[in-house]
Every structure is written in C-alpha cells, then in structure tokens.
Length: 254
Picture (cartoon, rainbow, N blue to C red):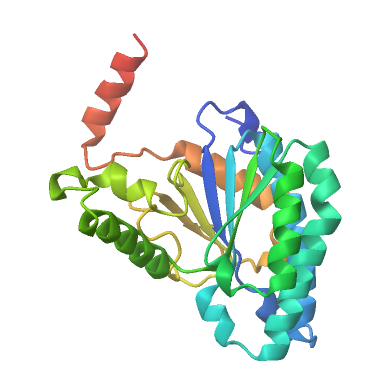
C-alpha cells in the first residue's frame, strides 16, 4: 500500500471534514498580523480542495467560520468576511473547471448581506457540477443546528403533521443542514487542539479522528494524502467487534 497514492486505495473516505485551526498562531509565530494567517490559509483551502478532488473524496466540509467567531474583534470579523467572499469569487472559475460544487451550511441569516449575496451567486454558478462537493461551514455551530432541527420537528408536531412515533434518526437527520450528505468518515483537525469545537456533533458519532500539530497554513497535499492513507488502515467497528466486522466484510465480498 503506497501512502502517497490514496487514490489507489479502495476505501478512500467519501466525506472528509476539517477544522482548519492555527491561522492566527501561524502568523503570530512569524511576527505577522493574524490576518496574514487567514490569507495564507486560503491558499491551503485551494490545494486541499484540489487534492480531495483528485483522491476521489465526494464531500469536503471545511469549518470556515463558527457562530462563536462572531465574538472576535469586529475588525478581524469584517476582514474575514471580505477575504472569504473575495477568495471564493476568485476560485469559482477553477471550481467549475474542476467540476466542484460549492455549498454552505450554517446560519446564513447572520452573514452580512454583501457576503450572503455574493456567496449565493458562486453557489448558483457551480450548482451544475457533479464532482466533489465543497461544503463551507459558515456562521455554523452544531448546537445551533440541533436546536433548529428540534424546533422544526416540534413545529410540525404541534401542527399535527407529525406523531411522536414518526420521529426517528432518519427524520432528525433530514432536518439538519447536512441533510442529503453522508456523515463524515474522517475528521481532521490542524493546530493540535484536542477538541471538536461545536462542529458536526451529531454527524461525527462514528467518525474517525486525526489531530495534527501542523497549523492550517502549513498543511500540505502530502499531509492530506498521508491522513487519507491512515484512515484507510483503520478498522471501523460501529459498536461491533473486530471479528464481526471481518465476517461482515467477507460476506459482502462473496
């Protein structure tokens, strides 16, 4: 098995989620303003999106801006919003060229109007693409998402459109912002912190985790390929024993 060529491995994860952490620390370590780290981080988004597409990943979800990030200094937030939309507009022609569909999850109602309008236009322009789906988690928090799903279900129940017996895991998942997407197979966190930071809490129940000390601006294609290869070596048991998983796999291959 060649760790440098995960595209040749049969079980490349269909959905990879990434907590892109370390932009500010990367900049501070170089005596630069935090914004310089965010700018450099955009270049990393481009190369990892390219590598994900080349490797056969179907969904790449990037934790781009959390609801908690609204609490950062206004100057940093304003700069981030402008950087995000400008970068996406610049990259949209290449996304189309590479058959990448752009979408978002999160509370878009809190986004500045200029950002929301421009992002929706980029999504419209890539909506016909059928390759990798690039999912930007913007103004996103898993607790917000879960509460919104609960409100939606309760509203239908009060209106008599749902009975308690109708509420199951499938229905609940259909009310999340990730409805229609597979749950992440692999979650990568850069920057070394050992936490999931309110990201896809419901969806990552059985997701494989990888934490790297590398700051996001330094995260390379080789790093990503190495992590895909590491994922492919893991046995995902989903509550079963290793022997049960092997038996199920053998039966599927008959």
